[in-house]
Image (cartoon, rainbow, N blue to C red):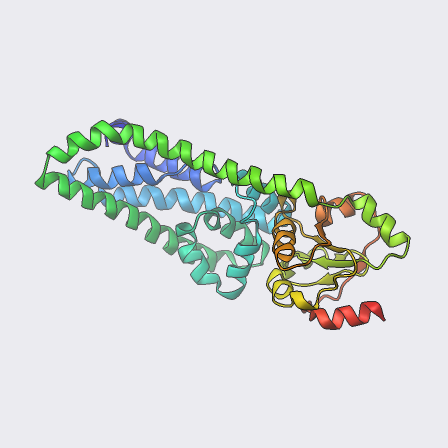
Length: 328
């Protein structure tokens, strides 16, 4: 592990702190190689395991506390920026919101083990009104678990080197190249997946102006609001006649979705990721006239187009019911 261990021996805990802080701030630069190297050095007593763990935990708490406050004061607009920084539009905010809505403490404790969820969990916690004290407690426990697991894995490898020093020559020869290849592959893989989804999206999405013309002409359009209920709390409005349904409910009741009219889906994800994903899912289920709305709710609102108010207490309405009421 020549590359990370050499740098770690030079800059020590400061490098470990800075690298973890940068990753937790949302920059997709994996800290795993550095943590593994630090763990290996602790086996040789060149670094202290407790001090390395402390440096990492402090970095996590600083970054996560900052995102918690940003999420509390700026809401889903910041979450959309984080989605773009993650280069993973399919993750979006919904998976984090779903996990957080059901089990706050468990989500925070294990978020750092899940790519994408790690960065999004703190601002979602802030947006969702969680108290800072409990957040700090569970986020700190989660940071300790994540860092201790990686440092312990590195320490295990370091113990192996004690018994077979020849492993160090092999690791030193290949670790630098493997680290570089790993980082490059990390970026290339995510960029490729992003491009493939965006390519499919461009071919299918509907312009807001076109939808507005359809509504003004009295066309019977089935509009579905895919936003998470938490997103409607600060903005309790929806497109005219839209039905609020979760992606899971929409897919489960696909047989009840009308086939004789346009089905328009919208969300607030970067590049309409959730709407595009659901459009492709419904298309595979035989629903051909389905399209995501370009720009989603935010673009419709920016253009000043009409909106309908929704009740403060949200509930998911079955498709069959909303379909009957719409046609009535």
